Length: 386
Image (cartoon, rainbow, N blue to C red; front, side):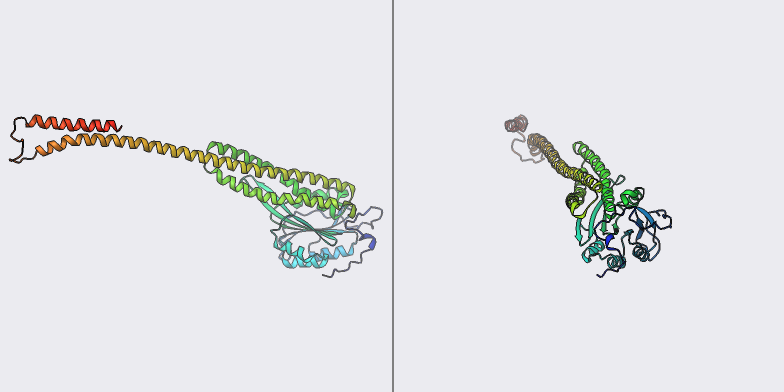
């Protein structure tokens, strides 16, 4: 896309990052620095996605445009200025206008529209395109909420496109505006501040996850049946967290590799190295969390299996005992059935029955019942039914 001419002196556009010394900078505009408005979405229909736009010179805010068109005009009129534009879920028309004005690459613009990108750093000519995955810990829900931030960094502009609530870029802007010396280092300093804010936002998440893991370990050994679901959900969050943090290590090392080529300020180099150290530490903690959750899930599965085996043994033992009782009851029922059968036969009122009028009929019947009962008793006793 053709870029609009701003009549910019070559001496002030000869590097990716521009440093302006007080002696070399043009006279400061008599317009007083406008106070920073709250970093929240404007309510106007045409500017509903513009969070805040500001023009800076020598590290100080000189104007606060209310629209993209006004921002473009003021930046053209002030070659020594730097624009910092913040957007929240912008429309396609707004991104196209930014792409035309600042010569943004079409692929980067498409990524900013689509969102759901992985963390990455890409260079398109003199413009850096950075995708960051911010995170915050929600105490009430005990879960991690992820946001997405796209950053375009050029020679005289920084454009942030935020998808989600994190990170809080208003705090980043306030920090930079209270440190004009750092902000005067240009767009690269703003990128550092954004990276630092995103990485610092990981610390509460790490603390919250560590607390969750401690609670899960207690629940696992306490036999809580619902702990498996919590382990699974936290493991998924750690996979997402790892996708957000691990690429940052390579991204920052890539930035550090270009320090000499792009003439990065030495103080800014130290700041970026500090952020890289923090990212490495966070990434190692996240890897440790994933391993710990995998181990806890294995232990929980083992404990659940042991509990199930114990329950099955208890059921088997109960079944065995019940079977023994049934055998005893069946044996005594058979023993008692024999005399009942004999008594029933001789209780029938027929006239012509054998032994009915026999004098030894009664003793014979008693002995017969006793003999059958004793025989059955010894048979069941021998088979351990009694």
